[in-house]
Image (cartoon, rainbow, N blue to C red; front, side):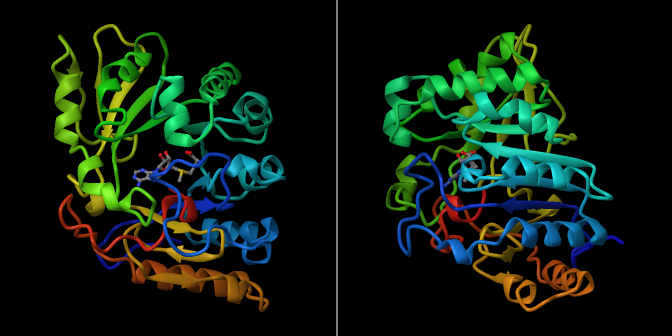
Length: 330
Ligand code: SAM
């Protein structure tokens, strides 16, 4: 079976947020309004998520990404990944983390089948790290990244959200990590979510052209083709580098035309577009005995409802996605 939406896009990628809890408090990711956290009973159990993932794989999803909140704070995540990695039809199991628990968990995760890992890192300065996240844990993240590399995770993608006056002067330094390491360091435009940073969005937002220009000005940078197998990033390579530098611009470039993804929130809603407030409930069906066929039907409905794209730009961003990223699963 294949899931194809009304615009001819093949949907084969599901991001599952397993918790809205996080051990960091990044102010651009923390919810601004509404409740701070979901209650335990509102969050899907692993059995429920597994049932959804199995149905998704039967419906044509081949790539899963586990995210959060911070996925590594939820007990049992390694065993959950192991069960996911054994699903029929699944080609890729990836995980997005802030890296705080990665030093101790990289090896068990690898053994459980996780190969692709995205790690968030907005700064190389311990003081700034504390200012952005609320905790003085930069060394833990850096050690976690090294452990992921050591156990053989590949690719290792480092995601940096660029914010004016916060970390936009570190672009070259973060990109320089690729000189000696096989990482993909990807610079991402800030998105207008329902977070504590929303009121400052326009002043914090840095358009991709601006940070891309800074990297392209480095002598002998090699620009790679715009489309490739690495997702929505446009890539380049610094002279002599082992790794790559990428740019992701959800606001300036709108890669909606090639969007292949759905999201499952920790409280059991399918989001068809990050910036749509429309959510399709799957939890009620799960808790009233839905069969695999019923869940596949809900996926088909979600795919049919997937909008052509979002219509936001840096100035027109009033219609946010209704939740902060921590509560969606970025
Ligand atoms: N805790 C994990 C982590 O830190 O990677 C996974 C969840 S976090 C919500 C996933 C990603 O979303 C992080 O890289 C974070 O920087 C990004 N993010 C959160 N809010 C964002 C925003 N407003 N704009 C762009 N990226 C955002």
